Image 1 (tube, rainbow, N blue to C red):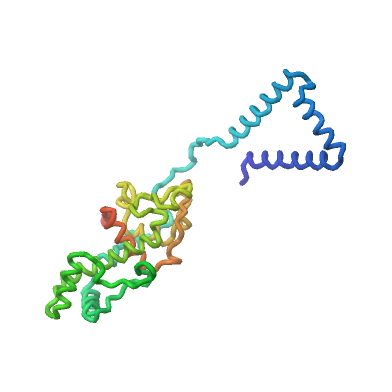
Image 2: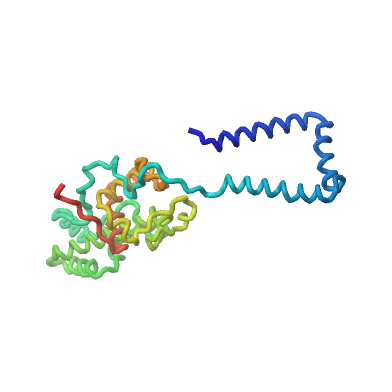
Length: 276
């Protein structure tokens, strides 16, 4: 429902438009408007009147504009919730990141890809100028030790292969974060990306202890998928500008980014309460 201020502004606008039509509809009307202004400026009404008008009119106008524009603190009529869950599907509450714990078949497939020199990366993963990524470019100890075993053609340690696969997924997650999330959340995950200053609500700072440590992985996944549009009314007045990433990222890509965010920030997700 429009506020009383909007009705008042509309009322003033109608008066001003009507006055302008009346005044500028004839030469005489324009002259009647200009003559008092010219006389006041030239001092025809006396210096005291001119001084009062030049001080009083700007002061009234300035005070009126300030009263309209100044921030007003109003006690909220409802409790604001940092992480609203009224439309949060319960199935996400106990969801674990499927990317974080590679299965046996996934490890076997990864080893086979490495033996064939054909380790597959997510479609968005590439280096500068669109050059494809090779697993040899991941400078992690476990990855390099795993590749050495593969090149020697003998026994490949499954535990080492699992660590290398996780390093590969973290590498993918960091690149996906830089492509999709860095403009708002920043390279350092502190919510200070190049686009952050254009939003009424600054993007979340993943380094603070009261953010991603206070929610489960399933909640993060739901929030990333649905964006600010998916938030219920009790999330206001945050008015999150985050888009619904389900339109641009696959579920695997979202989980990969979440894995990297927790790793880069040094945080751990909230463990679901199994007693419920």
